[in-house]
Image (cartoon, rainbow over all chains, first blue to last red; front, side, top):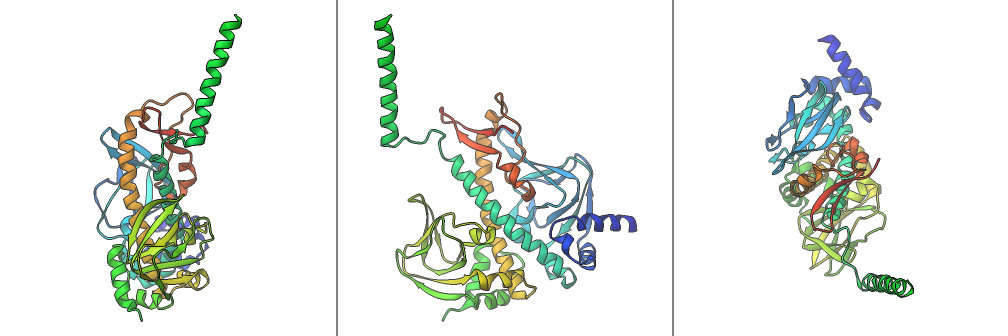
Length: 184
Length: 197
């Protein structure tokens, strides 16, 4: 048990942001947030389940899948240091948007809403929230851009100048073919 | 005079924010500057530095990009948090559609709050996290609908295509996710195209 705690503390110290905190504050987080281990191949979260907590991955690698009409699609991977499922932590009444499966033996801290009320864990929680602020902002901007691209045709509706250029190039092609035929 | 306690209660409900203390959020909002909005007034301009955070207390705004309206938003709602928190320029222009009221705070006032250990700072942090998480959840739903349409095509990769590594989940892999494009081919089918690594 002591070895596990020491190992968790060492892994926590390697996570950006949390690594800069004094050891006693990381220790407080370990006391307030229970650690879980998920064996390879087992689901960490399941799409559609109620989302009430997040996981801070200490060790391991997970696959993120989305269940659709055509089957499951792998949409990403997460590794140690990542905070996953945080939408359910910050927003009430949300469901998991994806299934997360451990690809290796994975160890994680369970971050539950109750942790926000634990005074001892406050510095670590503040650090997690500060990190989440910039990461979520970037993810939202990225997903907005992705959605816009997804709804934009690759050959955008050609405006008048582009359309005119297209007509001109087709005419030139026909003329050059005609000239070649005449000359031959 | 704006009742910041009522505003905080409405904001918490609108963004489904968890673990946000109403009174603490009201104390944070007391540091914001109230401003009246006239129809057509521009709150933020695409491409400009993001140095302010806005809370629309009353009224409605439109979000415009490339002269095209992306969406309209009604009070109460947090605006301008994405550029400010990501340290990037404004991604769109926001314009008032009717008379309204907003609360504004500049980054110099905001950052010590967000970085600090105060309960007001924590309430504001959690409200912003909830606002963004809410938007992300909505985006994920739309992306999943897109993925469902993409999946049959993505199962047959073409030469040069590589398997996707990320689709926006897991913040540490955000950079990798940028290697994935969703495009619509000439036949009008949506497909996932993974840029050559």
